[in-house]
Length: 193
Image (cartoon, rainbow, N blue to C red; front, side, top):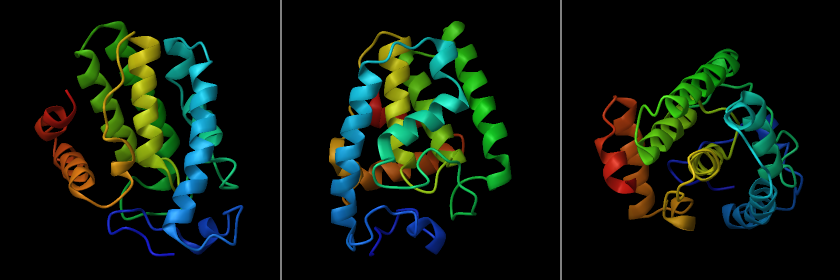
């Protein structure tokens, strides 16, 4: 399966976790995942959540499972392999908990404006790279859940499906995340606040 240049490649064990072995193009995979994501979003929409419910690593895993379990056997399980991005697999659970604790503090103490808080959360979650696949979509949905369910504000206008396909919108997003990796959030804030 041909991957976009900036997509996280799957190793053979993760590829074996695909529940539909007949899928052989990224387009087919995207379609299957999108159907599952819509089901996960419906589940999330109907869920009442507090800081203590949403801002946990167990909720992050549960949400990923709801978004991708009809496509991937390993949905909701932290990755066990090294990737070209993300921290070492053995650090994922610790860093995820630290991020959730930091974010809970930010929410409770009104540390940042709502969208800035969500973007900082999103960036760190992507940087940790919890799962073998779906990290960008999962982290955008988590960031929007923080905005809508905890901060009672509008979600971020991410650019829709354009973020999963190659193009200027996706490249601007990826470049802004890379800039944020260097502690410069200006491009990310400019794009989404």
